[in-house]
Image (cartoon, rainbow, N blue to C red; front, side):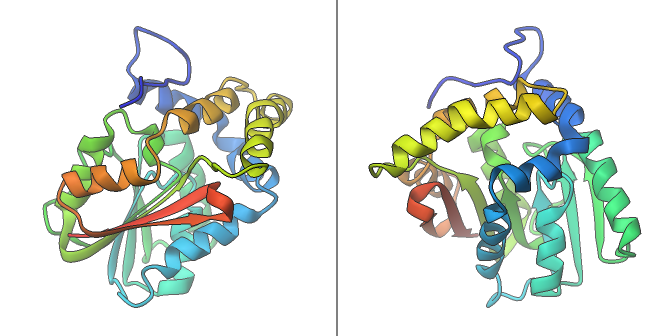
Length: 243
């Protein structure tokens, strides 16, 4: 496993604490910057990830690292579950999600909780599906987080993970690295009060065990029928597994 990449290089605080602080700091500009920097492609990728659950028709979904709730709102529209519960370590991000929930009158369908991905506040065998969009690379202990996701799934339930990966084809790899390492931090500095957050992004993606390495971790914690689907030359990937 690669060395642990943290947002602030603060040896006194754990990665978990630093990630929570980072997302609290950028919560107000997060949605805007997400769509702006990806040219809106992140919305298409979310829809592709959600489509992995269409045949399963899950009634109760857990969205881990739910952030401001964009993935969960999209899942509500596409899958029509009875309920989605979103969990996140950042209170600032959840405040934005709650504002959106109230504005859309979806409190009966979508609720959010402050929680740790490695110690999910739920019983075993509780959810039909668990989703994570752009969150697993921020886990302090990736294997532990995946094991807990597997724990809260019902037998036969499906996990869907959407995460950045590293393209390996010329010239996509070179263009991607240039954009992520130079353009993204520059845009982040311009619009966000936490410039470091947007330098952490490419560092965390570079250190993340993507592709077959991530699938192997899913296998290790007990997932079956694991699959890996690269999107747009491998810039992003969808991973699925069954309990």
